[in-house]
Image (cartoon, rainbow, N blue to C red; front, side, top):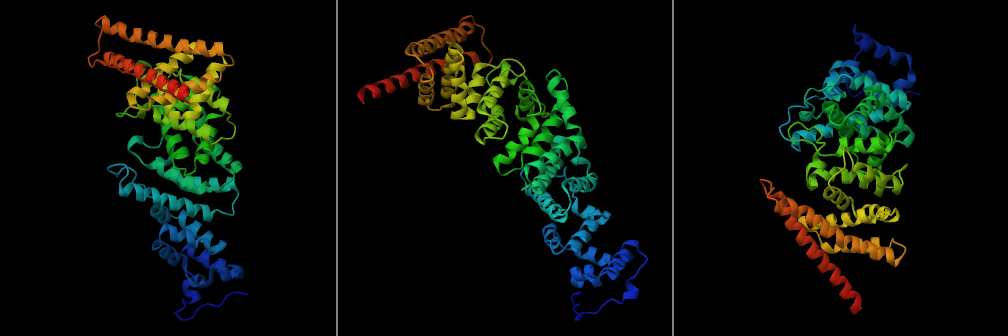
Length: 451
């Protein structure tokens, strides 16, 4: 039985509510013909559709989301409101370029608006199959050009993709893996993302700089950056990387997380080759590697991650060993040890010895504790199966210190010095690193004797 209407206010006569407006008459005809709808709408059944829309205009997005859970009928009318021109103008805010600085109150408010909007769409489309939900949401959001892969002419100054990512993160939070697979496939089909990725990973690095930037911004802002749980980020990063061979995975990882120019945001391909880089240039790559390793992401073994690190160190050509060492330090103890142990097991002791030298150099430059390098060396020594192999490895480290010192000394002695004396300073740090490294070895030896 339909619920009784509160008559403490004046009812609008039924005949006068039937206006010529198509939506309004449809609303009333539907109510008249379906008693079940009357009961679920409650007191709203006496209101023309235009009045309901005016009421919605005064509610916040969060409040509209709460209202959508009252009943299926109310939810349907909210969906209809979102589809109107006035509803879309009110809800799909597009002031993506009017923000002065990142992190301002205006930017935070805009992102929170799209978080609330994602929750509203999540509730309104709850009963629809995933495919139908995505089609409907795309139909509404397609009006916003800055949500498209190449829709904005100034992507670095635009918050559109970040808002789109916040919306999608809220919408899909809690969905199972199969549904999230469908979301990723839907986005790939919508944006032709796989074809664009193929272009940037198969062609010469830097030959499609603008497309590389677009791929980076879409992957970071839409798919990766807004998740609060690392396991969710690992899931989406896996979706991006796993369809490709290892060599292309490394290239794609560099495009998405590698160093970029502060002027135009484009990927700097020569950063790891031309000279020592800093922590900020490697932080993104290290965090992505830790994400895949530490979360135990589905589809990734420890060997897979180590192989990816190894492949990454030759993108686009072989890195300076100092940059490789810095990446391993930033990636954490487990990854660093597993990487070094892999070299030990595979008979690459000489290469491993040079890596130890540059680990010590980075520790000296960054004022990290040198005993970390010594203890890592000690731990790797245990991987070798015989005492002869361990002795040979330690001898290789001593030789590597001497060899690297001579390599750095030669340009200084020949007078081929940089304007900023970078080569001389590098040699200075290396000599200090060698002294501190051997000091820690002596401490370790004396402690072992005394105990």
